[in-house]
Length: 265
Image 1: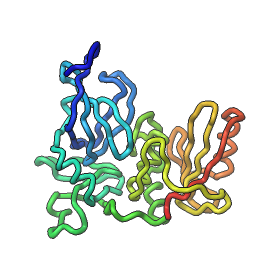
Image 2: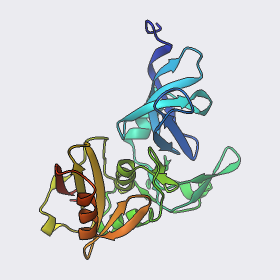
Image 3: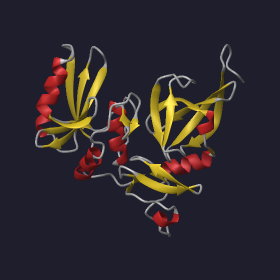
Image 4: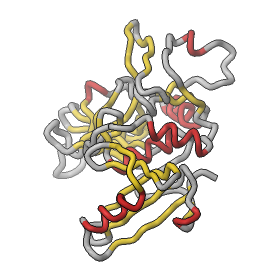
């Protein structure tokens, strides 16, 4: 049944999978709306609504806790059984800056964080089977600190883009959440994983979080060791930790806090 006084129809038990390099998700069902987030090849989502003209579908990405509107032409539906299988079994996560896969008779480029629903336990050589070129890692294996830092540095020089979630444009929180997701760690929007540690005890791979309490905005930095941090302003870059903190303190109000979190155990 259509919602009263609304052009939106609810849906239940509907699911989809991203079959594009990047799938844009908008705040409202219109192309001139703000970009909420992006999904990458192989990521699955729930479909929970559509517009009355069936041109837009409202989706929810369970892994990140983000949702919004996707143009109907880009929707690829799957069954509920397929959705739960894809989420609950191991899969490969693309780690190389640019990879490629033969899909529907054409070569499709894949970006870091894209998912290939094959595990290391497959009885065939899945790389040859799907025509994959690039590097990947099993999602079920959590990265150690050195590998996490390497994953983060692959996003070096990626430009800032509100709502962006790829090497071609990164939203700050989406970007660092994506780095940890590639490394096998879950980071749902608004719920940063890990435990707080003293800044002096920080190790490479730990996360520094600078919170502007007045604007309710957080800034993130991945600690690289040797007082260096990977951070994002207009682009992803390596900065001196003290200079990063001083810059933020000089450009925010008095109500701020700093947290250091160890996500890698």
